[in-house]
Image (tube, rainbow over all chains, first blue to last red; front, side, top):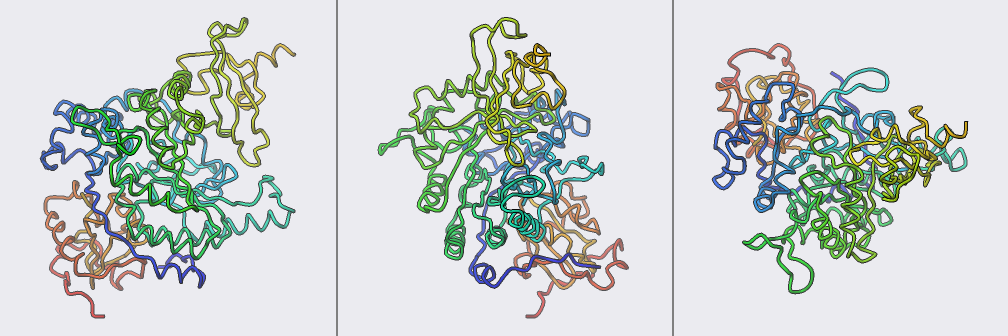
Length: 476
Length: 112
């Protein structure tokens, strides 16, 4: 049998890797509902699901509406403890039959496979995204990587069908070096895509923070050695098990920084609701911190402060707006304020993607805009940086504005229009900042909800699917 | 909750599981591998990777294999960690699928 050839670290990487220790983590994960049904979960978790809730999910097992097969159920002890006092975050982790009432949706939302030159790598924008783990410590029911987490088989560009695989260090390093060589030879732009060199890689999954320190360290040093200047780690572990960010982890980061002092780390964190980090009084209210702001869970605060102490590390939060979880301006206002106060930039809020079963989670686009806009009233300028983004095949698109003044002659225009703006185009971003304007449809949860009311389509969000804009029809 | 290596790994030890494990929670004896239940994060990757079909989710363990839960826990505390895939045992193909392999399990930790 031929063993796979592994990546061979350089001497410099090996010296750094020799210093890294793996920590031990007691996440106390409960996977699946079997233990809840059998009553073998710890005493205080017994009533996390009611008997009726368990029966309703169980009734769907093995059917085409199987909720557990759609997305495995998984929770950590820490998240359970936060969820006990929060309906919102119970909804985030608890399986519900609602998830499969309507199975409409796409198996590969955002058509990511189009942009996958190497297994486990998505190179759509200027940065590369790699899948390094196929699980998280707990599972968000609305996860849009459900095909990866639940190991579903999807159709590839070449027509073959297989589950999405994880990135291998050797493949990724070879791709980066070859890409950047071509760019350099061609005077700073890739001969085919016109992209600049790859400077930034986002480690995603799953959650890279389920990996041991040694494994994370191998990725960090290999990417740095390959010439990557900014490494992102996309993680929800600060919410699921903040004790993961222990002394051994920060010692590893400090050793990495010593070896590669000019490489930045960007922690892309994922908090959906303030209940995930804040403590509550017995009557369910947040607790004022006498020294300012609200009182955080000490483990989450300690981890965030450790990151904050390192000037070479940034933290950015991004979160979808999900029905029944955070479609709540007051919660989002507190979230944005507490993030910024503690050194976490508010980056994006997202409209839900059109994953299979998305109708159980998605908030209509215009409603999501209104919620975010409402939440940002009363925030200071620096607290209100976050934009509402919806991911189009063409690129990240901002829901820039929803108007209320009637626009005659436009379907839906009696209520006003929605203005989309491309924030980041795919490849060389030639279409950045272009705008599309559509007549309003308060029910729309995806771009397709506006197919019959496109007014202006400079961004080509619709014309690429041969859907005409009224402006272009009028011109003909 | 954890995943559990069961009897069909004995005398085979293909180690494909070690290559896919994201948290390096496999431990190696002379003719068997085990999973440390505290370190396993339930990703399910090793189940499909095992050519011998020897790995089960704790909740899916067949009745007659439940004793392997304890065996995995016990031996993962004494055996050394294995982090890289290696060649299977020489007679792996011959032993794959043989019934009643538990009696061949060697529990002693390998000499260093």
